[in-house]
Amino acid sequence: MKMHLEDIDCDIQQGHNARRQQQGLRCCSHKKLTVMAVFLSGCILSVYRVIEYKLIISPNYQEQMTHNYKETQTTSSTQNTHSRDFVAEQTSAKSTKKQQWLDHNGKSYYFETNKKGWDFADSFCKMQSSNLTMIKKTEDMNFILNHIMGHTWVGLKRENEKWNWIDGTAFHNRVFENDVQQEKSGSDCGSIMTGGILLAAPCKTANQWICEKLIVEK
Image (cartoon, rainbow, N blue to C red; front, side):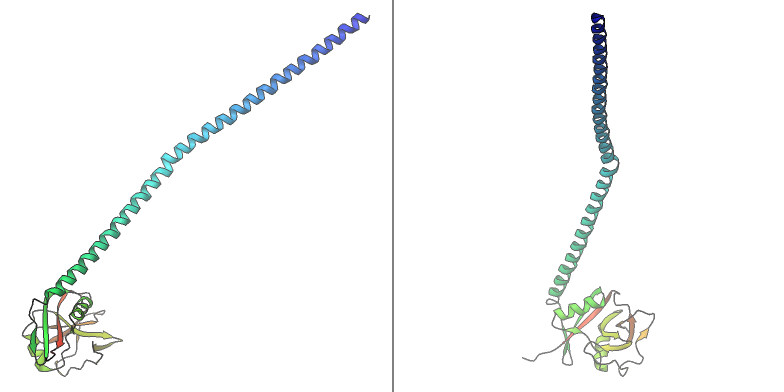
């Protein structure tokens, strides 16, 4: 009877051991599956990052780089254009020393045949220690009309709906038969035409111009 009980206890113990081994195998298998799942997740994430870079980030980056390059080229081109304009202005200003200034009635006149906007012409004359011409006498107008061809900027500009010479004096049509001829709105700078007509034109219009300065007696 005692041996029989011992056999039964042995069988029970073996059964417990077998269940523990099965549980251990299941636990080990679960851990392996977990490790494999983590590994596969990492692989999938890496593949996604590669795809994301190639399909999304890389094209956008290249596009941004291309855009930045074009902007740099445009800025550089603009700066070069401004630089060329400045050099051209300096060269043109120096060239007046070689060209003739014509004296008349206590003033010296310079007739520029190149064509630029009113503001450029104004700056050009100031660089020559002069100003755009102001026509306030009939004899001055007759002298000027003998030396111009086509539209020519003079020192006349409209501000606050009033035409003034650049020295601040108001324009009067005592010398000219008519007021400044206005063809369209936005024309705020004055030019003189052959025939003695004053014409309002947009200040950016490319015209010739006249500089004048007082003759300093030595």
